[in-house]
Amino acid sequence: MARLDTRTLVSALIRRVQAAGGFATIVAKGDPIGGIILVQLLDHGRFGTVLERMTDLSGRQTMVPCGPKDNPQDTEISDYISKRKRADPDLWLVELDIAEGERFAAEILCNG
Image 1 (cartoon, rainbow, N blue to C red):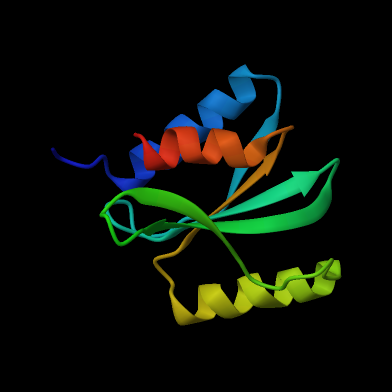
Image 2: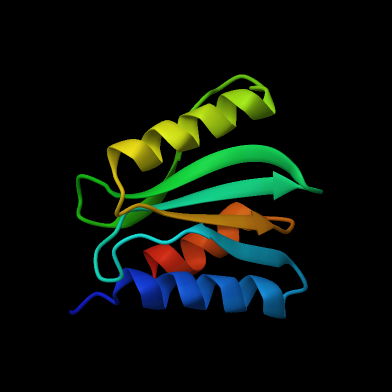
């Protein structure tokens, strides 16, 4: 089965979150076909978990926490994201501010 391109998946995620009453925006656009997708979950405007879409050993897509752990400061998360963008200019960064943001990300990005 053919996979949807990154641009289409990101667009679908943003529309799904906004339709549910949340906030979603593209912070960084990467390669429209196959760029890596990072999802920054916000909690009322404050930085939260960073998730990355990855393929597990069985070949399924899954959302995996990445970046600083154990209640990091906003600057630690910003530094991590900046470092990732410098290392991979094809990377997409999407911010979501909605309850159960991880569920929305997995629903669209892993099952799309």
